[in-house]
Image (tube, rainbow, N blue to C red; front, side, top):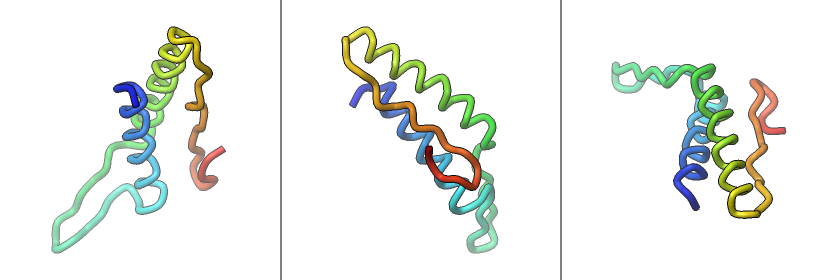
Length: 75
């Protein structure tokens, strides 16, 4: 897995966490605010472009076009 693919996977994991677990989590009196969903989606778009560019440069087809939509899971 390339660095761009790993970054994309990490962002998608963070998006998945927000969609399934919520924007904020409270545990033992501590509150954790996750990154803003809009910011993560902008990063996802950039990383998809990066992965696609890598694939084009190496002559491979990309499988990174999966995008998340709020409340609908994956497309």
